[in-house]
Length: 128
Image (tube, rainbow, N blue to C red):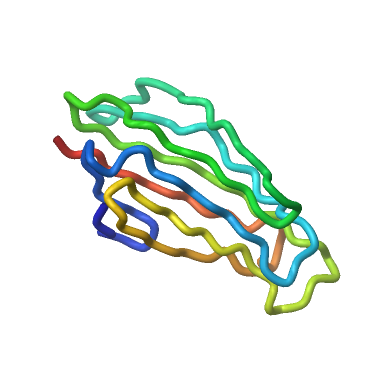
């Protein structure tokens, strides 16, 4: 997995499955809501893959992104709205840890927004 933009990653077959962990910091609950994975090829939406989320504790969400198709290039995107209580402090955030099967790890953060929710969009460009 190679970071090629703010929240954009180039991936190959050896990077899958990709593990995503979202952890709430300075919050009592993880209110991030990962969408399904949208797979597009040649600019057209081809498939929507459901995400199976686990919540091992109140402040953590985890899920895996599986290999979409080892024989063709595609773009995989996912939007994650992250909700913050009105009375949270300014240090509150959601930390995302994205780990590829090859051991590569990337991080990103969602901070307290002016208007709820804060949105994170992850993009994975699959290369043969």
